[in-house]
Image 1 (spheres, rainbow, N blue to C red):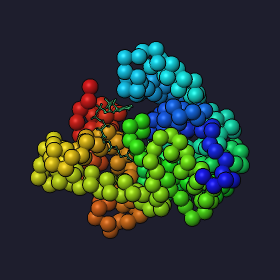
Image 2: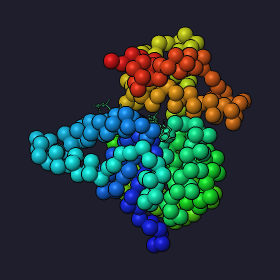
Image 3: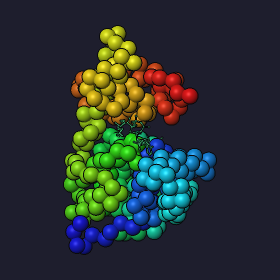
Length: 295
Ligand code: CAA
Ligand code: NAD
């Protein structure tokens, strides 16, 4: 980190879904004071339960056969976390705000525009967007030099990468602070430009969509494609399992956004099957059904 960059100690995370709760967990587990915000108490209670469940898996590995150490670790992480519905209150004392709400540009811009007025001037803003240009989101604020992308991967406690994205206006100091934060939460960081999908999703999402098109053409079943990619290419999940895991709504948001920007790129073309599943609210693991059914 450059000598003038202030180390990040307090973090506000807006959105407590799949990603927000995972980012909150790793930030708290690495000594940051974290406030997580969502829209209702019910959602927040669910996030708290999911963080505790995930911590349960972590401690089993970290302290096998030592229930006391397991309990102490979980209590310590939870003591670094507070969950609430007041976003304005949360950002007032934050060194870093990470947004992990729904993948929709207008919703993200409206949130950041409000937060920009409430946060102290030193506060750095970052989005965890999968696919929206960071510059389009940052345009809602007056702190372009203190804006960047921090793209985590699902499940956050397990996946070891964070993509750190800069826009032309991101200052070196901000970039260094974001990179240092990624490392401080135990991840390896890579530097990305503000291009569609950055590095990982630019390769992964067209692959997932190509798998759907292959099935739509009747060339194989989802189960066989998944088996093939796991056993033939060594992927931990096949593309259909992975799409269900990421969320079919998120996959659709990503591909729709890219198609709007590059309508002639065949890699970004639509899938009738994916659109139908999303319309039927079959969003994957989180809704109980997607390409597969989940109990
Ligand atoms: N919290 C804590 N620990 C977890 C966890 C969680 N949420 N999920 C899994 N784990 C741990 C388990 O406890 C287990 O630990 P041990 O090795 O100590 O037993 C380990 O991870 C493996 O888990 P499982 O045995 O349950 O299952 P698995 O071996 O099938 O692994 C997986 C699960 C890690 C998810 C693996 O299938 C995998 O890596 N899948 C691919 C995930 C991937 O590609 N993610 C990127 C998606 S794209 C994205 O995120 C970007 C985007 O913008 C859309
Ligand atoms: P999710 O649907 O699980 O969670 C989003 C949460 O944001 C919900 O709990 C919702 O109530 C909350 N929310 C929506 N608007 C809000 C607002 N104005 N204020 C506070 N909370 C609000 O979604 P997710 O999968 O966690 O994705 C979040 C972001 O992370 C998206 O931008 C997505 O593209 C990105 N992302 C997703 C993945 C993935 O695998 N799912 C991976 C990397 C990045």
